[in-house]
Amino acid sequence: MDDIRIASIKKDKGSYKLIIIKDNEETKYSITEDLLIESRFLSLRKLSIEEYKLFLSKLPLDYLLLTSIKYLDKRIKSEKEMKEYLLNHTTSLDMINVIIDKLKKKKMLDDESYKQSLLNELIYYKRDGRLLIYSKLNDAGLPSEFIYPIDALKDNIDKLTIAFDHKNYDLSYQDKVNKLKIYLLRKGYTEEDISKNLNYHLLSKQNELSNLSRDLDKLKKRYDDKDKIILELLKKGYSSRDIDDLWREHD
Image 1 (tube, rainbow, N blue to C red):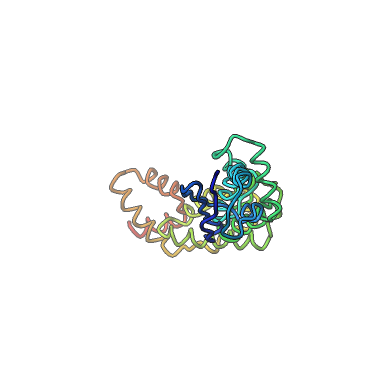
Image 2: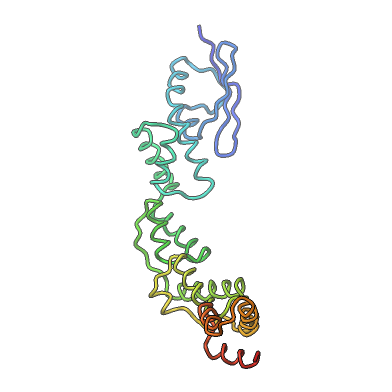
């Protein structure tokens, strides 16, 4: 006759550690609270063979649920992300759907809440533009429609402009403008957003003349042709007026 009993029940992080002894052989299990309660494993006691077999039959699904809960501990996930994750652990779509339903009932999987949380992160912390946000929402399997608050849009472009200016202090003013626009486009801002909200006064010009003088000296060593030198300086974004004024000083 089979001798089966629960020898130990210990609560762990998000799960329960269970030790069951069958015919003097000890086996350890990590299970969810759901399975613990469902199996009525609430005290150290003997188990019938029917109870034991029923418990074993529920372990695969419980393992998936426990794995999913641990996956959600890192950050909120979308339903699409969760399904893709579970496909790495099982090929059973029926089991995956059961797990998704369980997580929804536990309020641990909610695409609408996840979308709002993701939007807050992308807008107010990462300062992404609307096109990049559309892409990230789509990648997560979430509806891509959202409203970008006007105040946040203006504030984000201002802050990105100031940070860009500090990092690229040695560029000419026009170079800053050109490269800043490219940077903002890569961050997902539309040309219309940039045109309406970019504050050019946030870009400093304090190094403009010193940079122009430096570049002029370099180009004079490379070229003898004045027109060629002026053309190269114009390509770098310096104004014709500043170039003419500095050239007269050098002459």
